Image (cartoon, rainbow, N blue to C red; front, side, top):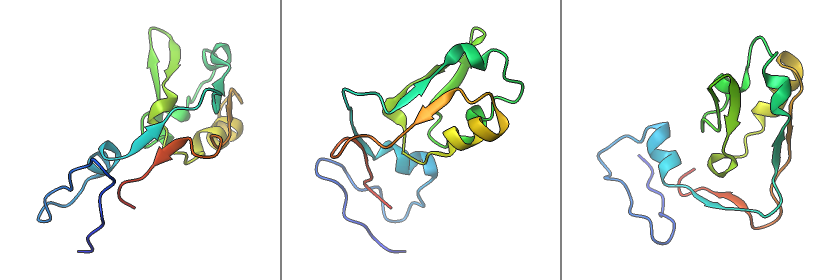
Length: 110
């Protein structure tokens, strides 16, 4: 098993433990940008039959609560799959772009 150097201020997980996706995501750092890099026209989501963003995002940025889409961009790992599936299978409500330089996710482990 290859060992990685953790980000400053992060404790490395025990070597004998296999890291789950949730373990790895919990070690990532996120630097918020003043400009939102994900914008969702949530009114379009109420008529979306499949709501593919709910299942494609490994960071669970999107959730369905009280009959409407809610999202938190601070958990985004910048995969971009949400905007693709929303455009192809959903109602085209998600506009996504990479955060500006130096902002967004910084991965502790690859």
